[in-house]
Structures are given as structure tokens and as C-alpha cells.
Length: 285
Ligand code: 3HC
Picture 1: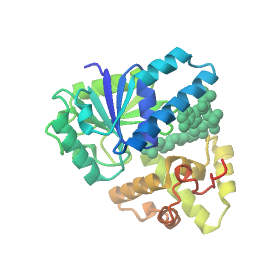
Picture 2: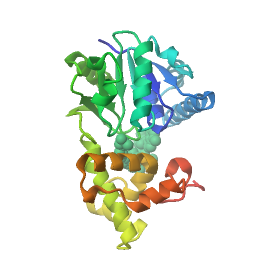
Picture 3: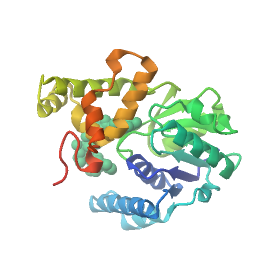
Picture 4: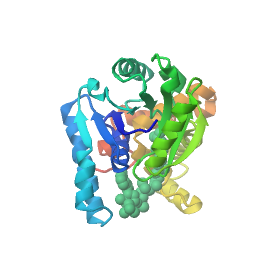
């Protein structure tokens, strides 16, 4: 099946980034946010991002207008009824995703694919909330979605070959390289990345090195584009904590226990760039 109309549920950093990628790929995009203000803010953010690309000479004005015309922001989930694919990117909370998928199952056409952008939750469990588990899979973009070149396509126990093929074709049409992975905590990237990020916070808390030296060391010593503490701020400390908790729950290993400093920052409301402060202060940027 060819994906022409894509619904995106969730107005966070990932939802906004995926909406930009899909609209630029030529899909009609229906962005669903619970509040009018967040839906409008997403479209404003998209317009700003496209304007930057026009300023850099990477997009012309007519393309910018055409991309924006393909995006519709809505608050009513029922507006996703005609979508070929609905990609969910709401909070990493299983009960919230189960309720959403059960609702989408009742709203969307029988042939529609329902995909999750979850980082760590079981895609099979999410699929179990629907009567179409064969049409459910994971399509996992990375942050920032317009820039990162890979997408993980996650095959859950009952995902059909046709669903996986359509998900792959969609991600490829968005200009992404696709990797296949089975349904296990953290898939490929997060299973390898987040134990390292968690350890970086433990290293900082131990007093072994400063924040800046940890980030400088990993950039210069490993040629990583960002240090681990900067990257945690980019991903969001709340999202990162929930990923690390899920990996810990899956492994049961003491070494995977979330760093208490990370949990403390989240409890203080320091969530990284999006809240203005995390390991770094963004209030003046
Ligand atoms: N949205 C759109 N475009 C963006 C962007 C954003 N949020 N941030 C940066 N860009 C673009 C810039 O416009 C620029 O484009 P151009 O080269 O075409 O002009 C390009 O990306 C490079 O940006 P900058 O020159 O400003 O900055 P850097 O060279 O420092 O790159 C970065 C920024 C791309 C974020 C880079 O530091 C990087 O790759 N960092 C690592 C990110 C990473 O590891 N992400 C994975 C996180 S884990 C995850 O997502 C899992 C999930 O489940 C939570």
C-alpha cells in the first residue's frame, strides 16, 4: 500500500519533526494535538523551520507554501479517519498508548496502518489494544527527525510483511535509511545509547569530571557530534529517564539503574532544552 495521508498524534519535539519530514516528502499530514494552542504552535514551528530552509536557499518559497498547505492541524482524533498511516508520538506511557490505539482502531479505516514512535515500549503490547495487530508496527525516528538519517522499523510478533513493507517504503520516501529490528526494549539505537548516557550522568555525579569536560572528552575522544550531557538535554531528561527506566526494567541489571541525578533534575522540572534548563542553561539562548 502507498502512504499518501499521514496522521501524527502528539505535539512534542518528535511529532513536530516527523510532521516536517512527512510533509516535505509529499504526504498530506494531519497533525493531532489535544489542545488548539499546541496544534497551532506546531504549525508555527514548522513554518519557522521551513523559512530557515528558504533563507539557506534549500527550499524555494513556492515549495514552502506547498509543504505548509499539505499540513492540517486538528484537535479531534476523528479527523484521522482517512489516513493511510497514523504515527503516534505521545508520552512514553503504556496505558496512554493503549488507550490511544484502541481509540484509533475504532476511528481509522480497516486498511490503515497504526505505528508507534515509541523508544522502548513493547510494540506487541500496543498492537494488542487493537483488532488489527497485523497492521501495527514501530516506526522510530531520531531527534532531530529532519536531520537524523536513520529510521528503525520495528516488527512486532504479529506485524504482517505487508505492514513492514509499507512502513519501510514510507520511511524511505522520507529520505531515511531504514534498519529492521525486532520488538525488544530500546531496539538498536537506544539499547546501545542510553546505558552510555546514563553512565555519563553517574560519572558526573561521582565528581570524577566536570560537565564540560565529560562532553568535551566524548566529542574529541570519540568524534561524537555532541557530548552525552548535551545530548540528554536535546532528547529531554524526562524522555531519557523513561527510556532508561524501561531498559532497566527489561534487563533487571543493577548497572542499568537510572542515575539518581537524572531523576532529581526531572523532579525539579529541569527537562533539558525544551524547559530552558537541564545540565545546561538555555534561558538566554
Ligand atoms: N530541526 C531541524 N534541523 C536541525 C535541527 C532541528 N532541531 N537541529 C539542527 N538542524 C540542522 C541545521 O539546520 C543544520 O542544517 P544544514 O547543515 O542543512 O544547515 C544541521 O542540522 C546541522 O546543524 P548545526 O550546524 O546547527 O549544528 P550541528 O552541526 O551541531 O548539528 C545536530 C546539530 C544535528 C543535532 C548534531 O549535533 C547531532 O547529530 N547530534 C546528535 C543527535 C543524536 O544523537 N540524536 C539521537 C538522539 S536519541 C533519539 O532520538 C532516540 C529517541 O527515542 C529519544
